[in-house]
Amino acid sequence: MPKKLSVLLLAAAVLFLASCGGEKASEIEDKTSIVCTVFPAYDFARSVIGDSDEFDLKLLLKPGSEVHSFEPTPQDIIDIKNCDIFIYTGGESDEWARNILESIDANDMKIIAMMDCVEAVEEETVEGMQKEGEDDEPQYDEHVWTSPNNAIKIVRTISEIVIETAEENGKDTELYEKNTKDYLAKLSELDQNFREIINNSKRKTIVFGDRFPFRYFAEEYGLDYYAAFPGCSAETEADAKTVAFLIDKVNSEQIPVVFYPELSNKKVALTICESTNAEPMQLNSCHNLTVDEFKSGADYLSLMKENMAAVEAALN
Image (cartoon, rainbow, N blue to C red; front, side, top):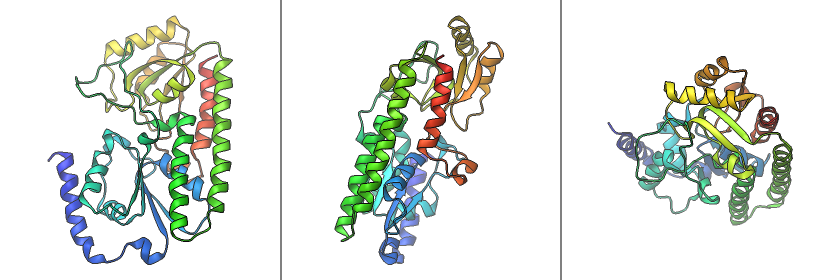
């Protein structure tokens, strides 16, 4: 059964059963419910609301889960139906979310698509990259938050919605305003640190032995890149031609690091490193994180600070 149809049927069945449930959970608990599909949205919202007990925040994509094969559970659908604020990426991989939104009465829900907060850029097939299937429709990179400047724009939008909702509920907004100001300052500092590292580096080229979910990062800081697949590819096995090209590129330009994203099987990156003097390193796209990282309190800022050291090593 096509995934779109299965999601629609599941949503219809769940919503029919849930229709007997009466009021929204957020109305019963007297809390504003925020549901986020992916970790960056969750972490940005968490940074804005802080330790307020006026909001109930939920993350749908569980830590350690594969992003590209996500399917909502019946409880996920109920949580979306009952939420006051829904934050999702807004790209092609979120078609399931759009299907659910179309199947419910979302008139009173505030919806934020992170891709709508920034200028989206198209995926591209750079030299040596394994080609995807032919598609006449442009494909847009969904990893908008990999640029700290984009993160600033997204956080501002989330903050505006949080403050607007608090005001509608007759609540004080001072905490959310302060949290936003403090967090935006940290994101601005993160951006400046990356600029300093990259502007003072010996090279401006990075190599990914995997998907490349860093188009926005590369665009922001003027980096060239080579990779096995585009950022939203479902591929994990590179063909021999692609691997050979990346090995030659690493050797010819003496690239010291070959990157792979979080939760990768690392196979392509390790194969390249075995044939070169390069070192394999993780670069966090922050799309998701491990269970242990989540439990230990890792967040967007801490993961991106890890990226600073990795980028510096790769460019020097």
